[in-house]
Image 1: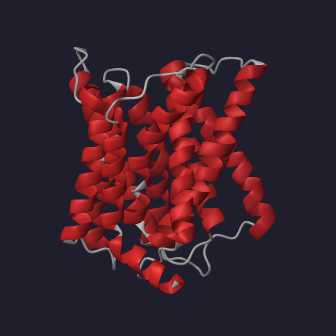
Image 2: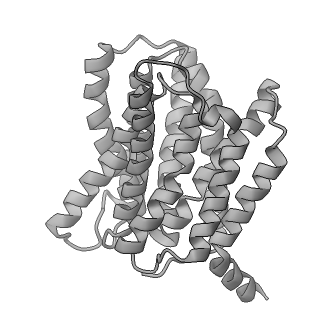
Image 3: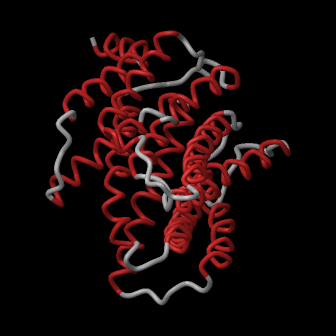
Length: 306
């Protein structure tokens, strides 16, 4: 199945980059109300409940267009683990021991992880020289944007394990994208819902084991949790499914180049945080790399509009 990259695909990727980039600000507020594992469990569970209602109301709870083979069921369960539950847990634990810059670079590396996986396992996603060069340029832009903090050490005893956890989380996102693209015909709303339900069933026991009983939330905490569950988890999960199923996992990975840009820009606008002097150069590299990696798709879109 050849990737179908349209202007809607670019718009959805842009919305996802902005949404996830702005999530860092809200998460900082949320961590004042909830410990990290219960924060992850809470937002995933809220998103799963919302999406379950939407799924039932819009498509009657239907998932596969026809009876699926057992391998498809196993794939859906695996995607639920690799797309949300495992990476959320790895990042929540790993970011205790690494800089935020290292975590950001790890997430930007998703595209570099997806490229070889998609080359071998996804038809129509060959790892060409131009595409590979574009992703390397975009990744260099992210590293420049985050500066020295991307590779600084904080001297923590478990820093090596924290770095490994962040890289492993990036690998999980890459694997889940490729598996999702390979699924047979499936309802996107149902898929997004099932993945959230699977993730909730995995993360809630982990939160209980790690942090004990959940804290009693305040009204402010509930509002923040509802926002995180509705926008960057439920709605963004659906958009992610739509992009991967239509435009492919390689195109979806462009989102990871945008997230640190939006995080820094929104921090400057809303919190008066300083912007790095390399922002313009880094942004130019990210845009150039994204454009180069998707040159063929952009050319086809422009010819279609001409």
